[in-house]
Image (cartoon, rainbow, N blue to C red; front, side, top):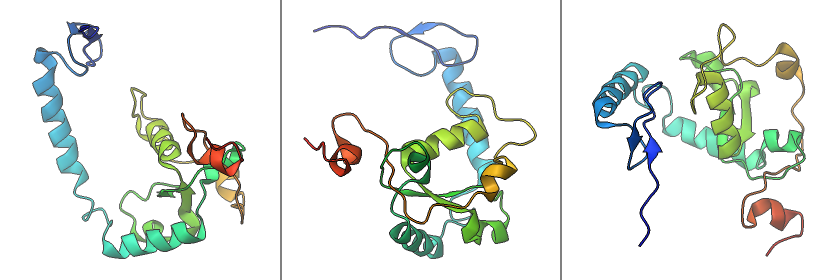
Length: 166
């Protein structure tokens, strides 16, 4: 049996080699405490407005907009699984329920957008304009019918829709 390659602690500037991905012993507890504090400030999904009413609205929106808008802009076809708030609502109920501020995205596109805006995946959060697209992007009309998709490894919906299914 082969042994797993060593990896580096994820704490910025640490660089200690560890057996499993994550944090070294020194930084693991610190990371857990910081994560708990972030989660406490953020509140639960229900507290942020993601209730059964939202689940029904989300399902209806995805039924009307089944394909990812971001993939469409790049000539790919992918099923939308997430209703994204184009401009983050940050607790603003009117903006939360404004359907003109919603866009259908696949999970990979939504994760990438969130990482760009909020500083995930090791990125620093954007400065003053965090979470906002340029006014040109906000003002552009959403395509009524989208043919788009992200290619997934091993086939996926993009290959089936484009007739290259395995």
